[in-house]
Amino acid sequence: MMPPAIVILGAGALDTARRIQTLYADSQVHALQGRVDADVAYGELSAHLRDLYARGTPIVALCAAGIVIRCVAPLLSNKRAEPPLLAVAEDGSAVVPLLGGLAGVNVMAREIAAALCVSPAITTSGELRFGTCVLNPPDGYVLADIGHGKRFVSDLLAGESTRVEGDAPWLDDAQLPRSSSARLAIRVTPRAWDGREDELVIHPRSVVAAVMLEAVGSRALGGLRETSSQAKTAAARIAARVRASLDAHGLAPLSLAALLASPEHMTDPALAEAAAELNVPLRLIEPDAGNGNSAASLLHAALRIPYKTLYDDRGQGIALALSPLAIDPNTIGRARGRLTVIGLGPGSAGLMVPAARTALDEATDILGYQTYVKMAGPLRAGQRVHGTDNREEMQRARHAFELASAGRSVVMVSSGDPGVFAMAAAVLEALDASENSAWAAVELSIVPGVSAAMATAAQAGAPLGHDFCMLSLSDNLKPWGIIEKRLRHAAQADLVMAFYNPISRARPWQLDKALDIVREYRAVHTQVVLGRDIGRPGATLRTITLGELHSADVDMRTMVIVGSSTTRRFTKGAQWVYTPRWYE
Ligand code: SAH
Image 1 (tube, rainbow, N blue to C red):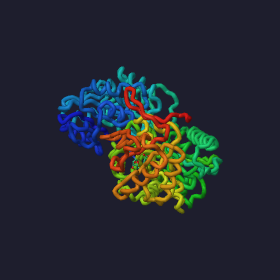
Image 2 (cartoon, protein in one colour):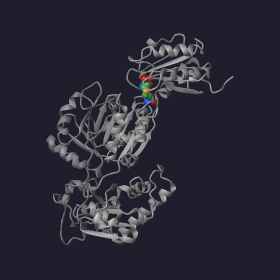
Image 3 (cartoon, rainbow, N blue to C red):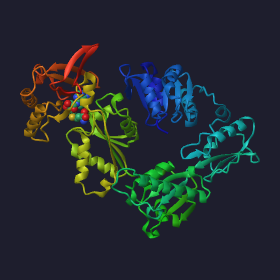
Image 4 (cartoon, rainbow, N blue to C red):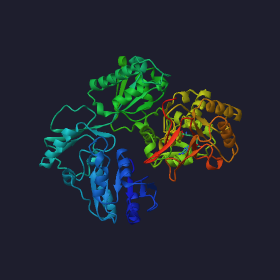
């Protein structure tokens, strides 16, 4: 289980929160910014709870149950993610499980209540009667059919007893009405449920399917990044073969724990698609040379774990291994590494695109300039952070590939958009220069972000409403002569100009020189927008004229937008700057 977020509003709840924290390794106390210092600071309770909930984080909120309910209410129609959600009285006198019955909320309520020496306010009948939720097997086990499960539990509640067939150690302590001659049975088995109403079937995820791509007839499409329709067809074929193979041996699709393939095919998009379609992770392992070139040879290599049965459907290119116990897929072979270069946007969480948030949530490793990594939080406690100084960009890019090619899920963080004067180009430069085939096999993707020019323009109105260009005034990586030339051409072409990196301590004179050039072509009344720390605490936005602009008004955290001859300003309700879409 993911460690819970223990959320408090004020200092009065901190003691209780810390006591709960000792129960869950890696859990963190989240506190309202400015009220009390804890592990993670948040700005607003309701948005924070919704964000945690939507990300599937278990939540222990030390405040009134009503407040918690109201906060997450807008998300409740979506049944997809229902993490455990509990309200706990700040003095520890009451523990109320609210949501997440199938995700173990009552288990948490019992644990927390025991630690606080109170009784949990459990209202679930089955749970009260049997001391456990029969419908909530532990990690590695899945219920064959939840609808049927509910009927089964109501039969038990009506007074029937049950047998337990198969290995279900988590039921040992349950106060189930057991009888070896019972009509009802709880059956733990990888075999497919045959539809018998008197059995509650729970599948251990105990089957690994190895696929030999050549035999399934998918061409390795390595190098093509898209999941083309060809890859989709191949993926559907692989998934169908795996399902057919499970079916042929009477195994339930839900018993599948992982799809296994040789690393030489890891860039084939069909494999990743097929694993996604089967809803299991894809794991990679070198075939065991002594066992020939078959899917079974992959399993021989992988199955240092004890397994009961091995099915080799030779002609099909699929082999299955069945283990007596649930298998943790993370212990078999390794994953295909991932490197995702994301942009955080200018700073506020609302301006980060959801795909960037998802990538951060899924990452095992996060790399970037310390300030940006901090902006990317709150991170999960198990995530590794590799913060560095801003200057070592190429070194950081190479480090990212090293981690990803070892199978980790790496996120590289930039501010704004990662492709605008930021890490995406450095990452591609590192890959371009590398001879390492493992780097090329990394699943690389780039997630766009809201760049400083866009964020600043939106605050001011629409100064980029007509043709514009983005220029970095930094001459760290390009000669100053080039910058002068581009400034002259852009000014002459009457483009609106967005200046990134306008000035720094190491580059004190360049901005004045740039403005001198622009003034040769633009009138003194040209509109200029200065956005500083946009989207961050203490943001400022000013609109002045080119005549009024001095380099002292600008620092390295400022975005300078110099208008064209048509950029205008007016005040109606508020002051607005825009560049009309048309030209006279
Ligand atoms: N990749 C970033 C830009 C990096 S260059 C992006 O797309 O926004 C760094 C420059 O961007 C800074 O010198 C400043 O000019 C500008 N900048 C970045 N964040 C900013 C913010 N929040 N407000 C104003 N300017 C910002």
